[in-house]
Length: 457
Ligand SMILES: Cc1cc2nc3c(=O)[nH]c(=O)nc-3n(C[C@H](O)[C@H](O)[C@H](O)COP(=O)(O)OP(=O)(O)OC[C@H]3O[C@@H](n4cnc5c(N)ncnc54)[C@H](O)[C@@H]3O)c2cc1C
Image (cartoon, rainbow, N blue to C red; front, top):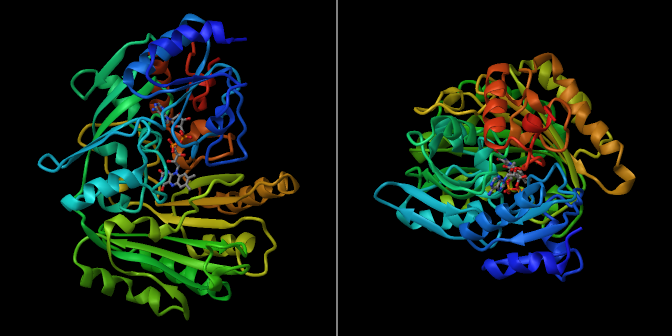
């Protein structure tokens, strides 16, 4: 057990803060977006800069402490019990280079910060559906967002990664400096160190035509079948997903969506707004609309396409990639999450993939799941009384679509369900990731990561 005497030298050498379990603020720093994940590290280092991370890693390695990293806690699935938790949320520097169309961000930056900084230059990043997610954690896992069909994964556009590896060395990693490590860092999510800075490309998207269309759940079958027929004909500029929602009667939830089943069609068209509007017209005609926010919108408001929750909540989620979505698959989804079903699943979502998602980037990376055509995702609340019902009901959604499974998941969408997490990569990619991890972290310092690395211990 660490005590104040032991950590005093570390505190004196860093600009950030060292916290032990009895310190005020310790508990707040362990909790993240998913309140169902409770973690209890021996010590927290709230790093203020890359040098702090170097010193923290050196301190932990010298004492045999395993290390976990947290920016926002959106992706905390393996609790950091024991060891050191490096919290990067104070590392918030963001620089935009409008000439080169790049952003350079520190480890704790969230997507909305990049969106707001890039917007005045008419540029946009490849963020995810929620803009309070951390840039680094998202991108290390590939990063499949609302413009993915147009531009691919966020990881496909990374130019440089700065990280501290388990030997305590601060490294600048590019395609030229270390091709293997650069490949693994973009999509491998197997914790090869603590990333302190990331540089990536931005897209010329000042506005988009898009938003959300909400309809009564009684039209779910008509909407889902129409969506399935419609999306497969869309060009790469058009991105869409659809979700069956069961939202609670709570402040913040628009009145027409409370305590009932609704269907939410999300749409983002990059390019000519008139072309985007005419491509979307068939979906507007399927059923009476409760709320329609689909319009020309500044990119700064992109979080309104999905309307993900912004406040922390206890949740359980799972997902699966699909190779196809025939009419029978839509019927199977309706059987477990459609009208008349009593389920705690608050969101059962289908995302349309393909387009640029299927294309390898110029510099190859470890992103898995490129061949899949759709992603199915289910999430529900996890209060103690739903501890069994929510996981069972979420799994029922992915199991119902099993006949059309592409045989894996996107690692960022894997969520709470640790079953089959290694299926996020094909055998060859996984073996290469394991080898690179073994080379850079032979003693398993970063053992709280996804089981790419853990499975061999
Ligand atoms: C509401 C919501 C919406 C989402 N939408 C999308 C989406 O549209 N597309 C998508 O692809 N994903 C999406 N995700 C998944 C999300 O991208 C992952 O959970 C991601 O890991 C979150 O990163 P974070 O830093 O915010 O979370 P954290 O919990 O802070 O970090 C998660 C993990 O990322 C790694 N990590 C974080 N920082 C560092 C670092 N500095 N160095 C090394 N490793 C680090 C660690 O393994 C850490 O355990 C969503 C998640 C939520 C909860």
